Image 1 (cartoon, rainbow, N blue to C red):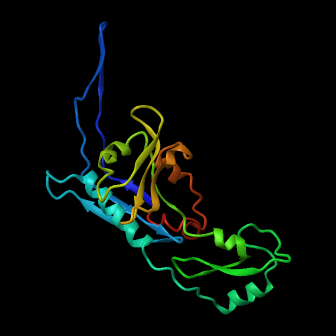
Image 2: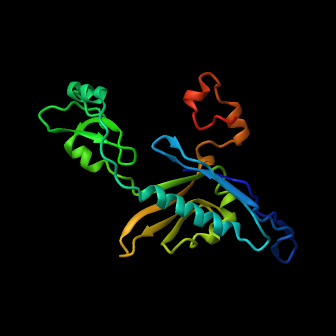
Image 3: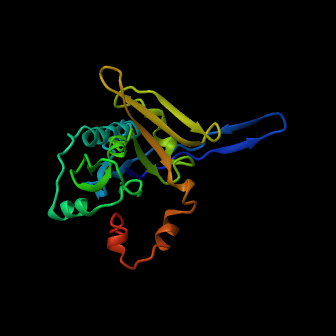
Length: 229
């Protein structure tokens, strides 16, 4: 899941004297709305957008609540039965390697593997590999410059949308490398984690520069989620 925030944090001015140092908040920025889209099984779902309707609305809380409902809607979908095309059947019959580990399947039972969200057949695999290759236990939510800016807009509202264990990996007292919220069912059994990550950590430049660096040859096929450049 990828998130783009339409909001801003607050500026701070540091006043220094000989006796003490302190931070004075001279301006406060409040988010006015948000937009995010969900990518599931390589397909982008309809974007979720919201704009502040009144001054009393807490956009950070609304964002966390809407986001969690979107995740529940996708995560709680029933496991779909396998959809096998004629091409899939031929590919399985002729397969000699496991598509997951790419090792040869020799003297072991092989089975068909499929995506539980879409039902699409993914290929031939070792039976023991297939039993381990199941639904992930975490949902990634990506921000660009999460730790430097956007996290301050909603991190205090993470308890919205229901309780859950919240933890973080701090960089400093004010910056986080990542943080997550654990979700449990009504019997207090662990279901999955919502993990917030910062794409700036592995693409350390502005979004504007990243977009300009994209090779526009075959743009629609190679970068199918960036069709509005």
